[in-house]
Image 1 (spheres, helix red, strand yellow):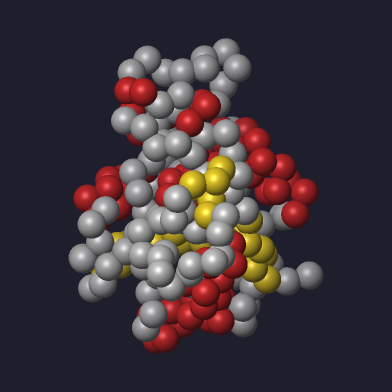
Image 2: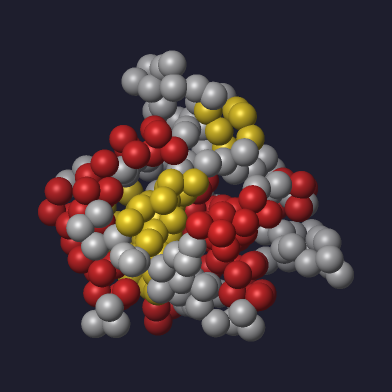
Length: 220
């Protein structure tokens, strides 16, 4: 059985749109991994840059209702249980690739999985591209909501090896810079590239990302 990657699309798109957006990275990763595209549960307007190119590919979907941190609660992220079910029934997954709001959802998923495992890694690696700022809540039946959105940093950082792609022309770049702090410093690699809020299109760079993921998976 080949190793498997969970592919998490951004907000206001669909798995089919993400396949097109990520086609360069998909082609590079597919040499080493099987890719599983997961579907967000909430209908919403089209995301940034989706129209007019992807007109007719609705309904567009998102993972959560973005709110200021002090207003977020678990209802903001109703997709967690669905994502956990996919992770456990369609897996095991060895890595995650996530774009934009999908990276925000991926971080929350990984935090929950690592807490379940007593801090151990849930996947070998995660690749985030143009991530948006992380959800601040926690899923815990004994503590539904940390007062005033207690910073995720206080709950510990994601331990999985992480690769982050940040774009200088991305209007959400300041959020991307915040996101990387939620991953263990010694286990993360950050690439700051030119471009906007989209998946990387350079063939060589995508091959580099895929090769890095394969090396991490193989323990090299």
